[in-house]
Image (cartoon, rainbow, N blue to C red):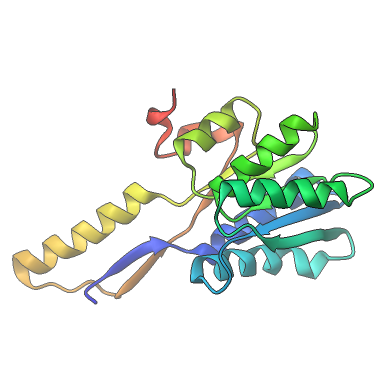
Length: 193
């Protein structure tokens, strides 16, 4: 390959974990909705979350962890089932993509838990940004799709113009957590209605 410009999914998962530590400095119970088993983004995002949570597992407990297969409806069913088996809901639900977070949001709404249980997605889709703005989600992880595209096109143009290859074949951008406080940092905020 000439160049790959993408998001560092491990750092994105770490951003989710760091947000938990910031939101709940005294500890938290966590529901973790993973992506498709075996898919590298799912593995990397989960690894990043565990990089942050595992060293402090005495205070931060993952009380439920399973795959929602990147799917809104499957995640909704999974969260409904998980909550039915819990005496108390978790402090926060982490989803490896926004689609699964949307499914979780429906369950939280139905149970009157919107705003009482934190909810963090990943992708910073316009619908997720709207839900963050409106208080239905706590956060989503911005992976800079515009930065990815620009970086890849810059590398391609430089190669086509004068044969210059990028200094490194793989460039990974560091995702950030988008909350109500920094919605202006979301690349797709202009698409939110």
